[in-house]
Length: 135
Image 1 (tube, one colour):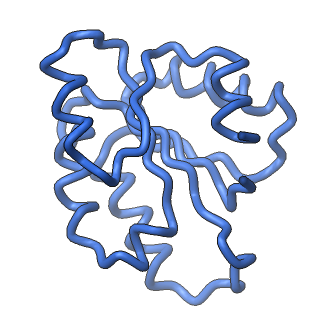
Image 2 (cartoon, one colour):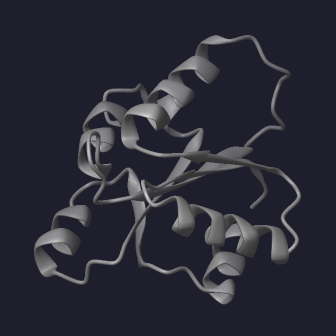
């Protein structure tokens, strides 16, 4: 799968920079967007849905790596808003929830949200990122 862009949503700036460097290290040369919380991510997505843009290659999606626990708009609140989009819009994104939590109270509810394709424990490894980005 090729990605139009990768959107990293994490309130921890150090974690975001580490993940971005790993993404650069494994050779991804597309755009990587760093956003500090779910509200900024939702605003970014909504603003890019309404602006005219160069037509994407058919089937090209954005990969969203969404932190679960953030102050303000966390991953859960982001997903409540995201789920309101129509199917065509939701299909433009692949949502992967990332967290350092291994607690079942965090992991089990994620399995009930079909728009979240995967749950990954942080920090992300080079191999895990390669698998996410290149399949």
